[in-house]
Length: 126
Image 1 (cartoon, rainbow, N blue to C red):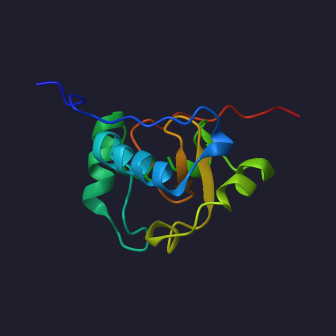
Image 2: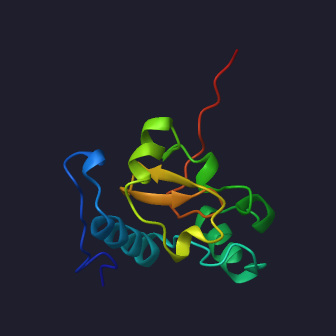
């Protein structure tokens, strides 16, 4: 069985056209198909981090260091944050420790969460 069968993908033509409805739909798809979480970042979430570690083939302590905030798809530029301000905050903003825009899944993500799409951000050299 294909786990992506029946999946709804909503992509806006331009990121600045992101609506609250599209944001929520894209976030729900990322939760369902890419394991976006944890839902509550203030708890230990041992099981969540074990699953992510297994998916990535790393140890749980290493998985805990892989967050939206250091993912290559995370955009927290002034322009992205301005666009995010047009989307009302909701329960995911309560403990996410700041917003950014996920360029891979087209939704507002949060510093302390992550999904299985995580990729290391290239570091610039001085």
